[in-house]
Image 1 (tube, rainbow, N blue to C red):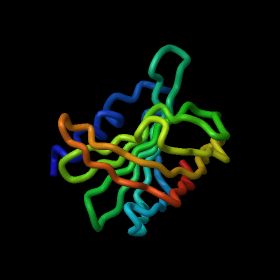
Image 2: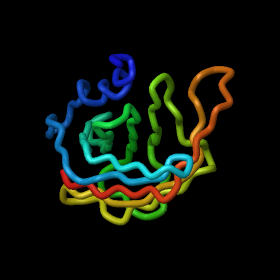
Image 3: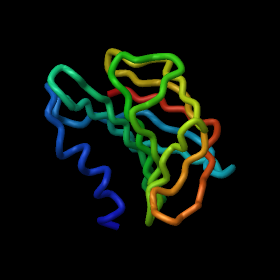
Image 4: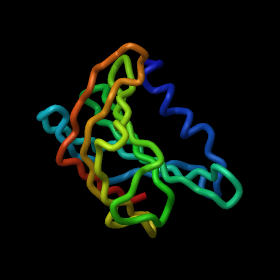
Amino acid sequence: MLALFSLFAIAFSSCTGEDDSPSQGGSVKFKLDGTQKEHVICIVVETEVQPNEYILTLTSSNTEETGVFRYEIPPGVTGNVTPEFMAYQLTNKVMVANEGEYQTNVSVNSNGHLKGTFSGTFRSNLANDDEFITITDGEFDVHY
């Protein structure tokens, strides 16, 4: 279980921006291979990755299962955008958004509010693993 969250814990422990404390609220909803999921544990962290260059990291989960969703985007960016990183972590592997096979649309990205939609195909990050998952009808609406 510890290994499950180690990848995502790095984002929280390496924050160096003006706001180093994670904030939470809202939800992330989606269908994972046709099964409806809802994450109500949502954390957004703003990190200064280089001088005057920031990234928002949305991480979500729920208390009933081990799946963790992660979405990274610069503050203020809206529209049909390519996120810096988008993934869904399963118990034993990270499924990364497959380049060219996902869509995101951010409608709000300001004043502590991140809202948008997403869908696509995610592939395993493990070598010699051809496993894919499909996420559809994804939406996030988080106040932080």
